[in-house]
Structure formats: structure tokens, C-alpha cells
Length: 113
Length: 115
Image 1: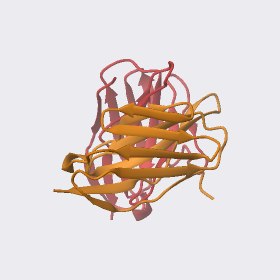
Image 2 (image 1 turned 120 degrees about the vertical axis):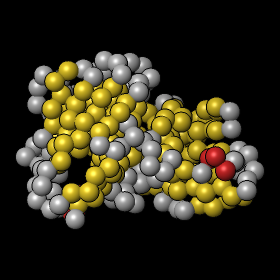
Image 3 (image 1 turned 90 degrees about the horizontal axis):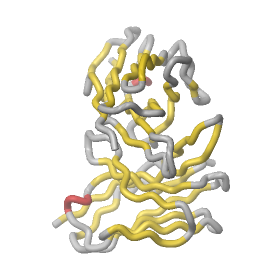
Image 4 (image 1 turned 135 degrees about the vertical axis):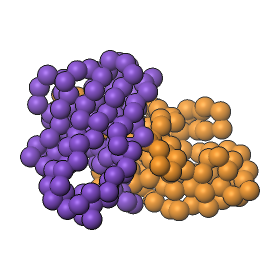
């Protein structure tokens, strides 16, 4: 079993739709939860960062963490064609003397006009 | 934040050869990491590049195959040695700052194809 599971998609939605992206994890040692966005032929960029269970909003993006279920989500409201990218969830844990990131496989999202 | 550049951006190499990838950061950083991103796969940490000492490798990655140097706080190299087609992948440099969030920033990646 992978430590972090993420549906690779692809996910295709019309412009303006609400998008829900999800990851599950198995390791209770994960302390921080992140969402990265990766455009084609670019490196990942940090989108959202959360620590505690609950919701965190930033503009059209909402990150949700449920530690009891080991489940995290990213919601995108009023999706735009510019949101078309691969979204990677990542979990951080302290291991071997430093913080280590474990990534999901990424979900490819396409928002069509 | 940090601006990270990688060279080369892409390369096509022959089996059995080696390629050295460079990572340059515009400011001094505490942590530097090297990741591999194979097609359809998640990012996998290869190693942590330590300034002034040997890199720390993750399970499944060894120094003979992926030697790493980090001569200072703004620069690191990753060499992919004795390449085979299975090494075809995107290699990404990442940097981190020790602090409340320990946020990591990624370079644009090096796209490697081995024939």
C-alpha cells in the first residue's frame, strides 16, 4: 500500500465548475499537508499548506484536512481554464533528522471553456 | 521564496553515459533536495544534498548511481551515472528553509531521455 493515494484522473470539467481533488494517506506521523500545482513542463509550486484538521481558504481554493479519516481535499471554486494543471498532494513528516515530503501521484485537471 | 534554475532543461543521452544536472538558487538555503518524477508517477525523493558532507540517500537510491555534490549554500549537482532507458525521467531540484512551515520550492526540472 502506498503511503499517499491520489486518483490520477484525468479530470475534465467545464469552466465555472467546482472541482474536488482528494488524497488519502496511511501514516499517522504526517504532520503537515500541502497541495502543489504543476503546469506542463514546469516545477511544482506550492498552492496551499495546512496543519490542523479543518478548512483553510485562499481565494477560490479551499484545503480541507480530516486527520481522523486520513483524508485531505482541495476544492476549486469557479474553475478557470488557467487552473488546468496537475495537482499534487504532499504530506510532510520528520524522518532521519529532517522534514521529508511524500507526494501523491498527482491528478491531472483540464478546465475547458 | 527562492528562484531556482536548473541546467540543462532537457537532454537526450545514450545508454551507458552519465549526465550531470546543475541546480542554482538565488539565495542561501538550508536544505536542497533532488527528486525524480517518472511519467505518471509521483515525485520521489532521491536524496538530500548536505553542504560540506555526503548526501543522504533514500531507500532504493545509491551514491554510485546518483552522486551528488553541494559545495556551498546556493549550488548543487546531481549526476545520473551509467544511464539506462529506465532512468528517463524528470529530475527536480528543490530547496527548503528551516522555519515554521519548512516550505519547499522546486526548480523547473530537467527532462532526461535515455536511448
